[in-house]
Structures are given as C-alpha cells and as structure tokens.
Image (cartoon, rainbow, N blue to C red; front, side, top):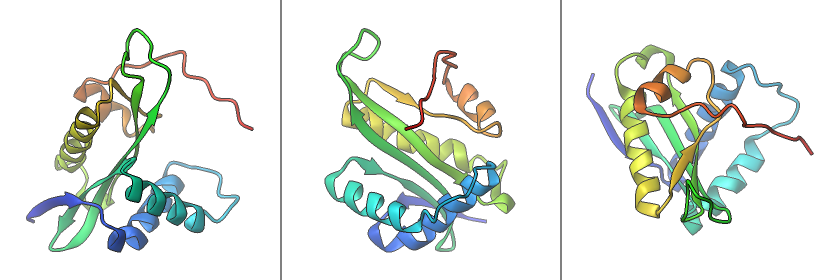
Amino acid sequence: MSITYRKLTEEDLDVFIRMRIAQLREEGAKEDVDLAEPLTEYYHRHLADGTFVSWLALDEGRIVGTSGMSFVEKPPYFSCPSGRIGLLSSMYTAPAYRRRGIAKELLRRVTEEARAYGCGTVQITASDMGVLLYTAFGFEKNGNFMQYKL
C-alpha cells in the first residue's frame, strides 16, 4: 500500500460526495432528503471561491480518505481575533484503510490550510469514532456547543 495525498478537484466531486454520504450514514444520520444535489452545488461554489478545501488520500489513484475545511468569518472574539474559523468536515477513511495514520495526515494537511487562510481556530462536531483522533491532535472539547435547528 502506497498512499499519496493531493487536493480535491472538481473532477473528484462524484466520488467525494458518495464518500461524504457514506460517512453520514455510518454516523447514523437520519436520511430524510437526497443530499447529492445540494452537496454538489455547495462544493462547486465553495471550491471556486476558495472557502472550501479538501485533501484526499489515494491508493493507486483510488480515493480512500477525505477531509474538508470550510472557511467562515464571524465577528472577532478574544480567542479568535481574526474572526476567521475553519469548520472541519468530511473526515472519512474507507473501512479497509483505517488505523494506518491516514486520517491524522489528512487532518494535519487540512488544518495547515486553515492556518494559511488566517483562521484563528478550527471547529468540528466529532463523531464518536473521531473523538480520539481529534483529542490526540490537540482539539479540546467545548461543552457549550449547542445547535438550534430552523
């Protein structure tokens, strides 16, 4: 196994979106809408304007791991004076490739993208499976995270 890494391109979107949906299903998300079209529109738009970036892990040209970072801006606050935040998503490794350091390398690369963009912090809503990876990397739990569904 020789894993290589590169950034997501428009040509990768079909596979990337299939893997994103597989990830959501694996995490137990309630599948009450078809996400393929809204995801396609989102990724096309945000890849084009530079507010989404993804690194991929490939084995002989086949995508086996994904990452994603959306860049958003909020009013500056003390722990993030730039107001720029990276929202981590799409962290997924195909089951046969897990526990080999792929997710850690993808996380390293995509957080460097956030640093380069000027983000002061990176946030994620972690799956149970991901908590160990993110904690080992240096993420800290914020018990105040809440969500209001509209």
